[in-house]
Structures are given as structure tokens and as C-alpha cells.
Image 1: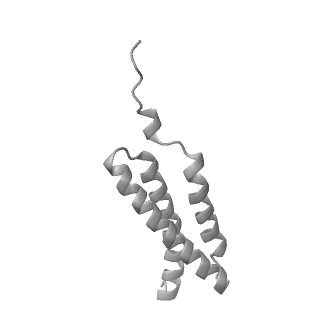
Image 2: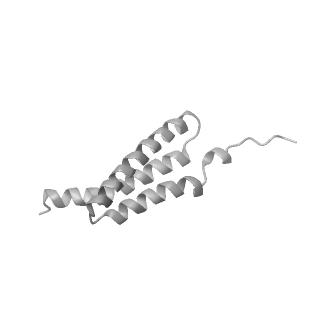
Image 3: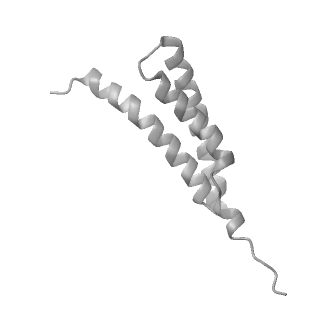
Length: 94
């Protein structure tokens, strides 16, 4: 049976990347007022992931690489993943 400490280790390794991916994709797929809320959630998730990554690297936990890659993915994903906002621009009729 899975012990409580093992359960928290699995959640620690899987929940943070899922949170980061969710925050990034919600920012890229939202439009209008939902985009503003998604941007706030993204910034909060980015701060949380940054602090957890810092703690993980300082303690030399086993999941430091997963947390560091999650943080890098979020930072680089903002610039590389295209958003819907530009795709929904209205073209003038000529």
C-alpha cells in the first residue's frame, strides 16, 4: 500500500507541472475578460512554482529537475506558444 510520504512525493512531482501547464494554456486560450483573469492566475502560479522550485533546489530534493523544467517551460511558453488573441483580430474589408 502507498504510504503517505510516497503519496506526497508523487503529488509533488506531478501536481506542479500540471498546474503550470494549466496556467499557461488558460492564458493562451482565453480572450477578453477571461484573458485578464487567466493572466492573474498565471502570475500567481508562476510565483508559487518559483518558490517551490527554489525550495526544492535548496533542499536537493529528487524532483528538482522536474520543478526547474516546469518553471523554464512556463517562462519560455509565454513567448513561444501562440495565443488566440492575435488570431481573432478583425480584418478590414477592402
